[in-house]
Image (cartoon, rainbow, N blue to C red; front, side, top):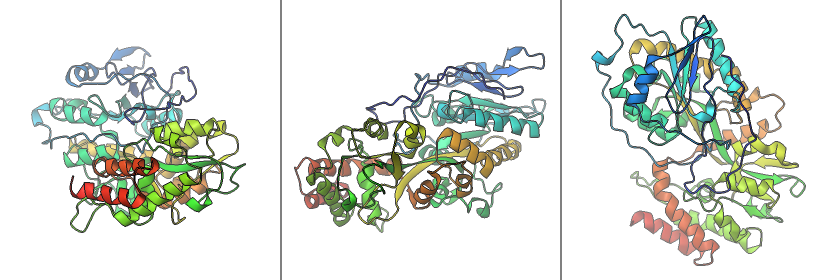
Length: 481
Protein backbone atom coordinates (compact mmCIF):
# COMPACT_ATOMS: atom_id res chain seq x y z
CA UNK A 1 0.00 0.00 0.00
CA UNK A 2 1.71 3.17 -1.18
CA UNK A 3 1.01 6.10 1.15
CA UNK A 4 0.87 9.59 -0.36
CA UNK A 5 2.99 12.17 1.36
CA UNK A 6 1.03 14.95 3.00
CA UNK A 7 2.27 17.93 4.94
CA UNK A 8 2.65 17.00 8.59
CA UNK A 9 2.71 19.36 11.53
CA UNK A 10 3.69 18.60 15.08
CA UNK A 11 1.03 17.74 17.64
CA UNK A 12 -0.91 20.76 18.80
CA UNK A 13 -2.02 20.83 22.39
CA UNK A 14 -5.53 22.00 23.13
CA UNK A 15 -5.63 23.64 26.53
CA UNK A 16 -9.29 23.03 27.25
CA UNK A 17 -11.94 20.91 25.59
CA UNK A 18 -15.44 21.91 26.73
CA UNK A 19 -16.87 18.48 26.05
CA UNK A 20 -13.85 16.58 27.42
CA UNK A 21 -13.93 14.45 24.29
CA UNK A 22 -11.05 13.01 22.25
CA UNK A 23 -9.80 15.69 19.89
CA UNK A 24 -9.38 13.51 16.80
CA UNK A 25 -9.99 14.37 13.20
CA UNK A 26 -8.89 13.63 9.68
CA UNK A 27 -7.37 15.97 7.16
CA UNK A 28 -5.43 13.50 5.07
CA UNK A 29 -6.09 12.73 1.42
CA UNK A 30 -7.24 9.22 0.58
CA UNK A 31 -4.36 6.76 0.49
CA UNK A 32 -4.34 4.06 -2.16
CA UNK A 33 -2.49 0.84 -2.80
CA UNK A 34 -1.98 -1.42 -5.72
CA UNK A 35 -5.01 -3.37 -4.56
CA UNK A 36 -6.49 -1.66 -1.53
CA UNK A 37 -7.99 1.75 -0.93
CA UNK A 38 -8.50 4.37 1.72
CA UNK A 39 -11.38 6.82 1.94
CA UNK A 40 -11.73 9.87 4.14
CA UNK A 41 -14.33 10.54 6.84
CA UNK A 42 -16.63 12.20 4.29
CA UNK A 43 -17.26 8.69 2.99
CA UNK A 44 -17.77 10.14 -0.51
CA UNK A 45 -15.12 8.44 -2.61
CA UNK A 46 -13.27 5.17 -2.65
CA UNK A 47 -10.52 4.93 -5.25
CA UNK A 48 -9.30 1.65 -6.69
CA UNK A 49 -6.00 1.45 -8.54
CA UNK A 50 -6.42 -0.65 -11.67
CA UNK A 51 -3.69 -2.53 -13.51
CA UNK A 52 -3.52 0.28 -16.02
CA UNK A 53 -2.82 2.68 -13.12
CA UNK A 54 -6.06 4.56 -13.85
CA UNK A 55 -8.66 5.26 -11.18
CA UNK A 56 -12.37 4.57 -11.12
CA UNK A 57 -15.12 5.21 -8.62
CA UNK A 58 -16.36 2.15 -6.75
CA UNK A 59 -20.19 2.00 -6.90
CA UNK A 60 -20.45 1.11 -3.21
CA UNK A 61 -18.98 4.48 -2.31
CA UNK A 62 -21.90 6.24 -4.02
CA UNK A 63 -24.43 3.99 -2.31
CA UNK A 64 -22.83 4.70 1.03
CA UNK A 65 -23.10 8.45 0.50
CA UNK A 66 -26.86 8.24 0.06
CA UNK A 67 -27.59 5.82 2.90
CA UNK A 68 -25.26 6.76 5.72
CA UNK A 69 -24.83 9.93 7.70
CA UNK A 70 -21.14 10.85 7.88
CA UNK A 71 -19.22 13.43 9.80
CA UNK A 72 -16.72 15.87 8.36
CA UNK A 73 -14.14 16.74 11.01
CA UNK A 74 -11.67 19.61 11.19
CA UNK A 75 -7.98 18.92 11.24
CA UNK A 76 -6.00 18.43 14.40
CA UNK A 77 -2.87 16.60 15.43
CA UNK A 78 -3.95 16.05 19.01
CA UNK A 79 -3.48 12.45 20.21
CA UNK A 80 -6.71 10.58 20.76
CA UNK A 81 -7.48 10.29 24.46
CA UNK A 82 -8.31 6.60 24.74
CA UNK A 83 -9.37 7.10 28.34
CA UNK A 84 -12.01 9.69 27.58
CA UNK A 85 -15.63 8.94 28.34
CA UNK A 86 -18.07 9.94 25.56
CA UNK A 87 -21.77 9.74 26.25
CA UNK A 88 -23.05 6.23 25.50
CA UNK A 89 -24.95 5.77 22.24
CA UNK A 90 -28.06 3.62 22.33
CA UNK A 91 -28.44 1.14 19.47
CA UNK A 92 -31.47 -1.08 19.09
CA UNK A 93 -30.80 -4.82 18.62
CA UNK A 94 -30.65 -5.60 14.93
CA UNK A 95 -31.87 -8.68 13.10
CA UNK A 96 -29.60 -10.41 10.63
CA UNK A 97 -29.43 -8.69 7.24
CA UNK A 98 -32.29 -9.57 4.92
CA UNK A 99 -31.33 -12.27 2.40
CA UNK A 100 -32.57 -10.11 -0.45
CA UNK A 101 -29.94 -7.52 0.38
CA UNK A 102 -27.04 -9.98 0.49
CA UNK A 103 -24.70 -10.32 -2.48
CA UNK A 104 -25.96 -12.68 -5.15
CA UNK A 105 -23.93 -15.78 -6.07
CA UNK A 106 -22.52 -13.89 -9.05
CA UNK A 107 -21.29 -11.08 -6.76
CA UNK A 108 -18.67 -13.10 -4.92
CA UNK A 109 -17.07 -10.92 -2.27
CA UNK A 110 -13.28 -10.99 -2.57
CA UNK A 111 -12.29 -7.71 -0.95
CA UNK A 112 -11.96 -6.89 2.74
CA UNK A 113 -13.25 -3.67 4.25
CA UNK A 114 -11.95 -2.02 7.42
CA UNK A 115 -13.47 0.92 9.27
CA UNK A 116 -11.10 2.97 11.41
CA UNK A 117 -11.12 6.28 13.30
CA UNK A 118 -8.96 8.99 11.68
CA UNK A 119 -6.26 8.81 14.37
CA UNK A 120 -5.46 5.25 13.24
CA UNK A 121 -5.47 5.98 9.48
CA UNK A 122 -2.82 4.17 7.39
CA UNK A 123 -1.36 7.44 6.07
CA UNK A 124 2.00 9.10 6.55
CA UNK A 125 0.68 12.12 8.41
CA UNK A 126 -0.71 9.93 11.21
CA UNK A 127 1.67 8.36 13.76
CA UNK A 128 2.04 4.68 12.91
CA UNK A 129 0.14 5.13 9.64
CA UNK A 130 2.99 4.01 7.41
CA UNK A 131 3.54 0.90 9.53
CA UNK A 132 -0.13 -0.06 9.33
CA UNK A 133 -0.12 0.50 5.56
CA UNK A 134 2.88 -1.82 5.22
CA UNK A 135 1.15 -4.48 7.31
CA UNK A 136 -1.98 -4.27 5.18
CA UNK A 137 0.14 -4.52 2.04
CA UNK A 138 1.82 -7.63 3.41
CA UNK A 139 -1.55 -9.20 4.14
CA UNK A 140 -2.72 -8.47 0.59
CA UNK A 141 0.40 -10.09 -0.82
CA UNK A 142 -0.14 -13.17 1.35
CA UNK A 143 -3.81 -13.29 0.31
CA UNK A 144 -3.92 -12.56 -3.43
CA UNK A 145 -7.33 -11.67 -4.73
CA UNK A 146 -8.39 -10.07 -1.44
CA UNK A 147 -7.61 -6.34 -1.57
CA UNK A 148 -8.20 -4.36 1.61
CA UNK A 149 -10.23 -1.16 1.60
CA UNK A 150 -9.93 1.24 4.55
CA UNK A 151 -12.70 3.71 5.29
CA UNK A 152 -12.27 6.38 7.98
CA UNK A 153 -15.15 7.21 10.28
CA UNK A 154 -15.43 9.79 13.02
CA UNK A 155 -14.75 8.42 16.49
CA UNK A 156 -18.19 9.40 17.80
CA UNK A 157 -21.34 11.17 16.70
CA UNK A 158 -23.98 10.64 13.98
CA UNK A 159 -21.38 9.81 11.33
CA UNK A 160 -19.16 7.89 13.73
CA UNK A 161 -18.12 4.27 13.68
CA UNK A 162 -20.95 2.86 15.80
CA UNK A 163 -23.72 5.02 14.33
CA UNK A 164 -22.63 4.24 10.77
CA UNK A 165 -22.40 0.53 11.53
CA UNK A 166 -25.90 0.49 12.96
CA UNK A 167 -27.34 2.52 10.08
CA UNK A 168 -25.76 0.35 7.38
CA UNK A 169 -26.61 -2.97 9.00
CA UNK A 170 -30.22 -3.03 7.85
CA UNK A 171 -30.23 -0.32 5.18
CA UNK A 172 -27.15 -1.27 3.14
CA UNK A 173 -25.40 -4.45 4.33
CA UNK A 174 -23.32 -4.59 1.16
CA UNK A 175 -21.26 -1.63 2.41
CA UNK A 176 -20.65 -3.08 5.86
CA UNK A 177 -17.02 -3.59 6.82
CA UNK A 178 -15.56 -6.99 7.59
CA UNK A 179 -13.48 -5.57 10.42
CA UNK A 180 -14.08 -2.52 12.58
CA UNK A 181 -12.15 -0.75 15.33
CA UNK A 182 -14.32 0.19 18.32
CA UNK A 183 -13.70 1.68 21.72
CA UNK A 184 -14.78 -0.19 24.82
CA UNK A 185 -18.27 1.29 25.21
CA UNK A 186 -19.12 1.12 21.52
CA UNK A 187 -17.91 -2.48 21.33
CA UNK A 188 -20.27 -3.46 24.15
CA UNK A 189 -23.17 -1.64 22.50
CA UNK A 190 -22.47 -3.24 19.12
CA UNK A 191 -22.21 -6.71 20.65
CA UNK A 192 -25.50 -6.42 22.51
CA UNK A 193 -27.19 -5.20 19.32
CA UNK A 194 -25.84 -8.14 17.33
CA UNK A 195 -23.72 -5.96 15.04
CA UNK A 196 -20.49 -7.84 15.77
CA UNK A 197 -19.98 -11.53 16.42
CA UNK A 198 -18.42 -13.50 19.31
CA UNK A 199 -14.94 -14.78 18.48
CA UNK A 200 -15.36 -18.25 20.01
CA UNK A 201 -14.97 -19.96 16.63
CA UNK A 202 -11.76 -18.09 15.80
CA UNK A 203 -9.77 -17.83 19.03
CA UNK A 204 -9.20 -20.02 22.07
CA UNK A 205 -8.94 -18.86 25.69
CA UNK A 206 -5.22 -19.62 25.47
CA UNK A 207 -4.91 -17.16 22.58
CA UNK A 208 -5.80 -14.22 24.82
CA UNK A 209 -4.09 -15.46 27.99
CA UNK A 210 -1.01 -13.32 27.29
CA UNK A 211 -3.02 -10.09 27.11
CA UNK A 212 -2.89 -7.78 30.11
CA UNK A 213 -5.79 -8.49 32.50
CA UNK A 214 -7.49 -5.15 31.87
CA UNK A 215 -7.26 -5.78 28.11
CA UNK A 216 -8.93 -9.16 28.47
CA UNK A 217 -11.81 -7.45 30.27
CA UNK A 218 -11.87 -4.72 27.64
CA UNK A 219 -13.00 -7.04 24.86
CA UNK A 220 -15.47 -9.17 26.78
CA UNK A 221 -19.22 -8.65 26.88
CA UNK A 222 -21.27 -10.90 29.13
CA UNK A 223 -18.39 -13.37 29.39
CA UNK A 224 -17.72 -13.65 25.64
CA UNK A 225 -14.84 -12.22 23.68
CA UNK A 226 -16.38 -10.03 20.99
CA UNK A 227 -13.15 -8.31 20.00
CA UNK A 228 -9.39 -8.38 20.39
CA UNK A 229 -7.77 -5.26 21.91
CA UNK A 230 -4.98 -3.64 19.94
CA UNK A 231 -4.42 -0.14 21.41
CA UNK A 232 -4.51 1.16 24.97
CA UNK A 233 -3.92 4.27 27.03
CA UNK A 234 -3.63 4.82 30.77
CA UNK A 235 -3.64 7.73 33.18
CA UNK A 236 -0.13 8.37 34.49
CA UNK A 237 1.85 10.98 36.37
CA UNK A 238 4.76 12.81 34.74
CA UNK A 239 7.46 14.55 36.74
CA UNK A 240 10.63 16.57 36.27
CA UNK A 241 13.61 14.45 37.25
CA UNK A 242 15.77 17.38 38.31
CA UNK A 243 13.26 17.94 41.14
CA UNK A 244 12.29 14.33 41.87
CA UNK A 245 15.07 11.82 41.20
CA UNK A 246 12.57 8.99 41.68
CA UNK A 247 8.81 9.01 41.15
CA UNK A 248 6.61 10.00 44.10
CA UNK A 249 4.49 6.94 44.83
CA UNK A 250 2.47 8.17 47.81
CA UNK A 251 0.99 11.53 48.75
CA UNK A 252 3.62 11.87 51.47
CA UNK A 253 6.30 11.77 48.76
CA UNK A 254 5.11 15.13 47.38
CA UNK A 255 7.49 17.45 49.20
CA UNK A 256 8.14 20.28 46.75
CA UNK A 257 7.00 21.82 43.50
CA UNK A 258 3.52 22.06 41.99
CA UNK A 259 1.15 19.14 41.46
CA UNK A 260 -1.77 19.40 39.01
CA UNK A 261 -4.41 17.08 37.61
CA UNK A 262 -7.54 17.44 35.40
CA UNK A 263 -9.84 18.43 38.26
CA UNK A 264 -12.43 19.97 35.94
CA UNK A 265 -13.37 16.70 34.24
CA UNK A 266 -16.75 15.60 35.49
CA UNK A 267 -15.71 11.94 35.54
CA UNK A 268 -13.29 12.79 38.38
CA UNK A 269 -10.92 10.05 37.19
CA UNK A 270 -7.96 11.18 39.31
CA UNK A 271 -10.00 11.03 42.51
CA UNK A 272 -11.58 7.78 41.34
CA UNK A 273 -8.09 6.35 40.75
CA UNK A 274 -7.16 6.92 44.41
CA UNK A 275 -10.54 5.68 45.66
CA UNK A 276 -10.21 2.40 43.74
CA UNK A 277 -6.54 2.00 44.70
CA UNK A 278 -7.71 2.12 48.34
CA UNK A 279 -10.09 -0.75 47.67
CA UNK A 280 -13.23 1.34 47.16
CA UNK A 281 -16.11 -0.35 45.35
CA UNK A 282 -18.49 0.99 42.73
CA UNK A 283 -21.18 -1.68 43.10
CA UNK A 284 -22.76 -3.28 46.15
CA UNK A 285 -23.80 -6.90 46.70
CA UNK A 286 -27.04 -6.33 44.81
CA UNK A 287 -25.24 -4.84 41.78
CA UNK A 288 -26.31 -1.25 42.50
CA UNK A 289 -23.87 1.60 41.96
CA UNK A 290 -22.42 2.73 45.27
CA UNK A 291 -19.61 4.67 46.93
CA UNK A 292 -17.92 3.77 50.18
CA UNK A 293 -17.93 6.97 52.22
CA UNK A 294 -14.98 5.94 54.42
CA UNK A 295 -12.71 5.10 51.46
CA UNK A 296 -13.77 8.25 49.66
CA UNK A 297 -13.09 10.42 52.71
CA UNK A 298 -9.60 8.91 52.93
CA UNK A 299 -8.92 9.75 49.28
CA UNK A 300 -10.29 13.29 49.63
CA UNK A 301 -8.12 13.85 52.71
CA UNK A 302 -5.01 13.09 50.64
CA UNK A 303 -5.89 15.79 48.11
CA UNK A 304 -6.68 18.25 50.89
CA UNK A 305 -3.35 17.53 52.62
CA UNK A 306 -1.33 18.19 49.48
CA UNK A 307 -3.27 21.41 48.99
CA UNK A 308 -2.71 22.51 52.59
CA UNK A 309 1.04 21.99 52.16
CA UNK A 310 0.97 24.40 49.23
CA UNK A 311 1.70 21.93 46.43
CA UNK A 312 -1.78 21.77 44.85
CA UNK A 313 -2.94 25.15 43.45
CA UNK A 314 -6.60 26.00 42.86
CA UNK A 315 -5.73 26.48 39.17
CA UNK A 316 -5.96 22.70 38.85
CA UNK A 317 -9.75 23.11 39.03
CA UNK A 318 -9.66 24.66 35.54
CA UNK A 319 -7.93 21.79 33.73
CA UNK A 320 -10.45 19.78 31.72
CA UNK A 321 -8.39 16.89 30.43
CA UNK A 322 -4.91 15.31 30.13
CA UNK A 323 -4.14 17.62 27.19
CA UNK A 324 -4.44 20.68 29.41
CA UNK A 325 -2.28 19.34 32.22
CA UNK A 326 0.34 18.08 29.77
CA UNK A 327 0.65 21.53 28.25
CA UNK A 328 1.22 23.12 31.66
CA UNK A 329 3.81 20.47 32.49
CA UNK A 330 5.56 20.83 29.15
CA UNK A 331 5.80 24.58 29.72
CA UNK A 332 7.43 23.82 33.08
CA UNK A 333 4.66 25.49 35.06
CA UNK A 334 4.14 22.28 37.06
CA UNK A 335 6.52 19.78 38.61
CA UNK A 336 4.07 16.87 38.75
CA UNK A 337 1.08 16.39 36.45
CA UNK A 338 -1.53 13.73 35.89
CA UNK A 339 -1.94 13.15 32.15
CA UNK A 340 -2.20 10.23 29.75
CA UNK A 341 0.51 7.83 28.63
CA UNK A 342 -0.23 8.75 25.04
CA UNK A 343 0.58 12.41 25.63
CA UNK A 344 3.89 11.39 27.17
CA UNK A 345 4.70 9.03 24.31
CA UNK A 346 3.81 11.69 21.75
CA UNK A 347 5.72 14.63 23.19
CA UNK A 348 8.24 13.47 25.80
CA UNK A 349 11.07 14.49 23.46
CA UNK A 350 9.88 18.09 23.93
CA UNK A 351 10.30 17.95 27.71
CA UNK A 352 13.87 17.61 28.90
CA UNK A 353 14.47 15.70 32.13
CA UNK A 354 11.00 14.20 32.40
CA UNK A 355 9.85 10.75 33.44
CA UNK A 356 6.60 8.92 34.04
CA UNK A 357 5.04 6.53 36.56
CA UNK A 358 1.66 5.37 37.77
CA UNK A 359 -0.39 7.99 39.58
CA UNK A 360 0.63 8.33 43.20
CA UNK A 361 -1.95 6.99 45.64
CA UNK A 362 -2.54 6.49 49.32
CA UNK A 363 -1.00 3.00 49.57
CA UNK A 364 1.93 3.44 47.18
CA UNK A 365 1.17 0.29 45.19
CA UNK A 366 1.03 0.19 41.38
CA UNK A 367 -2.45 1.02 40.15
CA UNK A 368 -3.80 2.69 37.02
CA UNK A 369 -7.00 3.12 35.05
CA UNK A 370 -6.65 2.07 31.43
CA UNK A 371 -8.88 1.87 28.38
CA UNK A 372 -8.51 1.14 24.70
CA UNK A 373 -9.71 -0.04 21.31
CA UNK A 374 -10.50 -3.48 19.91
CA UNK A 375 -10.85 -5.09 16.51
CA UNK A 376 -14.23 -6.73 15.99
CA UNK A 377 -15.68 -8.87 13.19
CA UNK A 378 -18.91 -7.44 11.80
CA UNK A 379 -21.95 -9.71 11.69
CA UNK A 380 -22.19 -10.12 7.92
CA UNK A 381 -22.49 -13.27 5.79
CA UNK A 382 -20.78 -16.17 7.63
CA UNK A 383 -18.53 -16.98 4.66
CA UNK A 384 -16.87 -13.59 5.13
CA UNK A 385 -15.97 -14.16 8.78
CA UNK A 386 -13.02 -16.49 8.26
CA UNK A 387 -11.05 -14.09 6.08
CA UNK A 388 -11.88 -11.21 8.44
CA UNK A 389 -10.53 -13.30 11.32
CA UNK A 390 -7.33 -13.95 9.40
CA UNK A 391 -6.82 -10.21 8.94
CA UNK A 392 -7.60 -9.55 12.61
CA UNK A 393 -5.11 -12.17 13.82
CA UNK A 394 -2.53 -10.84 11.35
CA UNK A 395 -2.75 -7.31 12.75
CA UNK A 396 -2.57 -8.29 16.44
CA UNK A 397 0.33 -10.73 16.04
CA UNK A 398 2.93 -9.56 18.64
CA UNK A 399 5.60 -8.41 16.18
CA UNK A 400 3.07 -6.51 14.09
CA UNK A 401 1.40 -5.01 17.14
CA UNK A 402 4.75 -4.01 18.63
CA UNK A 403 5.90 -2.13 15.55
CA UNK A 404 2.60 -0.33 15.08
CA UNK A 405 1.93 0.66 18.71
CA UNK A 406 5.41 2.08 19.18
CA UNK A 407 5.10 4.12 15.99
CA UNK A 408 1.50 5.14 16.79
CA UNK A 409 2.52 6.19 20.33
CA UNK A 410 -0.10 4.09 22.04
CA UNK A 411 0.30 1.31 24.57
CA UNK A 412 0.17 -2.31 23.39
CA UNK A 413 -2.35 -4.65 24.96
CA UNK A 414 -0.08 -7.65 25.39
CA UNK A 415 3.31 -7.90 27.15
CA UNK A 416 4.98 -9.75 24.28
CA UNK A 417 4.37 -6.78 22.01
CA UNK A 418 5.73 -4.30 24.56
CA UNK A 419 8.86 -6.42 25.04
CA UNK A 420 9.69 -5.89 21.37
CA UNK A 421 9.64 -2.09 21.53
CA UNK A 422 13.01 -0.91 20.29
CA UNK A 423 15.27 1.06 22.66
CA UNK A 424 12.41 2.38 24.78
CA UNK A 425 13.28 3.33 28.39
CA UNK A 426 9.54 3.72 28.96
CA UNK A 427 8.77 0.04 28.25
CA UNK A 428 9.58 -1.35 31.75
CA UNK A 429 7.52 1.38 33.42
CA UNK A 430 4.67 0.83 30.94
CA UNK A 431 4.71 -2.90 31.64
CA UNK A 432 4.41 -2.27 35.39
CA UNK A 433 1.54 0.16 34.84
CA UNK A 434 -0.36 -2.10 32.44
CA UNK A 435 0.17 -5.23 34.52
CA UNK A 436 -1.54 -3.53 37.49
CA UNK A 437 -4.13 -1.57 35.53
CA UNK A 438 -7.87 -1.89 35.89
CA UNK A 439 -10.29 -1.15 33.10
CA UNK A 440 -11.71 2.35 33.39
CA UNK A 441 -15.39 2.13 34.39
CA UNK A 442 -17.83 2.33 31.51
CA UNK A 443 -19.31 5.63 30.38
CA UNK A 444 -22.60 4.56 31.93
CA UNK A 445 -21.04 4.00 35.35
CA UNK A 446 -18.99 7.19 35.15
CA UNK A 447 -22.11 9.17 34.30
CA UNK A 448 -23.51 8.11 37.69
CA UNK A 449 -20.47 8.24 39.99
CA UNK A 450 -18.55 11.03 38.26
CA UNK A 451 -20.76 14.02 39.16
CA UNK A 452 -20.99 13.29 42.93
CA UNK A 453 -17.25 12.57 43.05
CA UNK A 454 -16.49 15.76 41.17
CA UNK A 455 -18.70 17.82 43.46
CA UNK A 456 -17.08 16.30 46.54
CA UNK A 457 -13.65 17.21 45.20
CA UNK A 458 -14.71 20.78 44.46
CA UNK A 459 -16.26 21.21 47.91
CA UNK A 460 -13.10 19.99 49.67
CA UNK A 461 -10.58 21.96 47.58
CA UNK A 462 -12.70 25.12 47.82
CA UNK A 463 -12.92 24.74 51.59
CA UNK A 464 -16.69 24.31 51.57
CA UNK A 465 -16.78 20.87 53.20
CA UNK A 466 -14.59 18.49 55.15
CA UNK A 467 -13.50 15.30 53.40
CA UNK A 468 -15.80 13.27 55.64
CA UNK A 469 -18.87 15.44 55.02
CA UNK A 470 -18.23 15.61 51.28
CA UNK A 471 -17.80 11.83 51.08
CA UNK A 472 -21.02 11.13 52.96
CA UNK A 473 -22.95 13.52 50.72
CA UNK A 474 -21.53 11.90 47.56
CA UNK A 475 -22.50 8.43 48.79
CA UNK A 476 -25.98 9.63 49.72
CA UNK A 477 -26.41 11.26 46.32
CA UNK A 478 -26.07 7.87 44.69
CA UNK A 479 -28.39 6.18 47.17
CA UNK A 480 -31.01 8.93 47.02
CA UNK A 481 -30.54 10.79 43.72
